[in-house]
Amino acid sequence: MKFRTYLLFGSPGSGKGTQGKIIGTIPGFFHMACGEVFRALDLRSELGKVFLEYSSKGHLVPDDFTLKLWHQQIKNMQVMGRFKPEIDHLVLDGIPRNINQAKLLDVHSQVIKVFHLQCPSRPKLVERLKRRALKDNRLDDANEEVIKQRLAVYDSESMPVLEFYGDRVINIDATIYPYKVLREILQHINTDAATEQPAS
Image 1 (tube, rainbow, N blue to C red):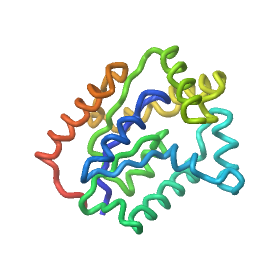
Image 2 (image 1 turned 90 degrees about the vertical axis):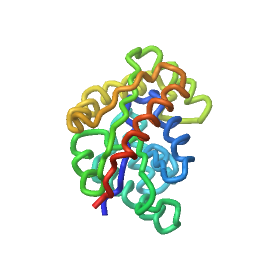
Image 3 (image 1 turned 45 degrees about the vertical axis):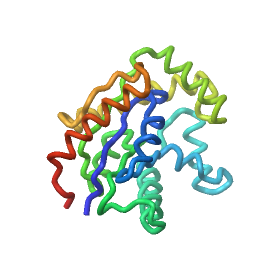
Image 4 (image 1 turned 60 degrees about the horizontal axis):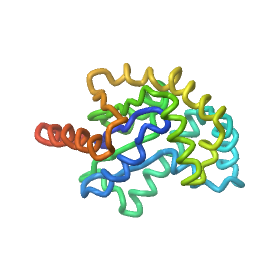
């Protein structure tokens, strides 16, 4: 059975996590942020050291490591009863981050829609990320050079993912109020619910 999945896609600082957390509180939806899974790692462990090595430079963590950790977390959530794929929709943010990850994700997930949160102003994104670094104590957002590197990697490696999903992509202006972004996302989800077929 493939997981019925919605993707929240956008550059660092575009608001994916904010929207995902809210949608994840709605019955029938389970939100998983790949970045939070990484940041929850013990940085003294072997896996934690791999994450720190890449994230501290603004680089993407290798695909095999990312998907392995993602799949393990999904299994853990199923065992704990927090994610019930037979009745829940999976809401992902932070994955896939490149074409190869998208192809690997397709093995497990039936992606219904990709909500592309657009924020074309790079100075605004940098400021958002700096504020987030102070608020949430996030090492990957603290250094402006690392932020710029992350945004460059997003442009070169992540943006092509939108072509992979084609007409499933919904572009949303991420610079409007968060509640308006949420309203747009939910309107599309509501439309899908009327025509959705069970995952196989």
